Image 1 (cartoon, rainbow, N blue to C red):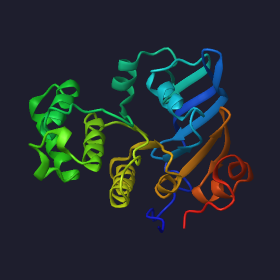
Image 2: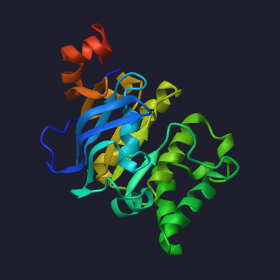
Image 3: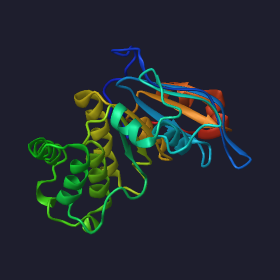
Length: 258
């Protein structure tokens, strides 16, 4: 598959970091997951995270959202130290959106009721809620699915719905945990286009982690490769797949994105 992203951000509109993970180490019991990790995420960047199972990709999401506290190190969002800030305050103050690999919706509610439920949490004014819901219905082309219960939606439709629900509060940062897992080629391409449009039209910083390396690299500006709790390569898709350490520890010699 050819690259669908027609541009790569070489020089960011703002070189400002929206998220900084500084000198951070994380242990689960006695097992070290992250080892003195440093990671910066730029404003309006699409960043991809790759690495084998257990390398710490989901842990990085948990650090950003507050689901996991670091054993050592600091987490900053928009320059503020949020290391000890509760989950709800992070989501409200810094406008985080999170799309988990599994779940994220209520299966016995219709698509429309799932959107309404989340909107009532984030938007007090009824008129503004309806405006936001109608915008998402149009943006994601949900018009024919409004009264379908979530349990009857296809895998791709469910993923679109969970992403739409995460956009209800107009997030500045959107975290996507394995969005391409178990989806067909056309659905993956649709999601790639949604991710790129979120960057260009909504000016959202998007972070994607997935095991589908080729699909991820086709829609990101920059990728980081994790191994043994550290970042071993960082750069554009072409740069990381050419990196010797990334080849030896993750991609192998034959991998390409053409």
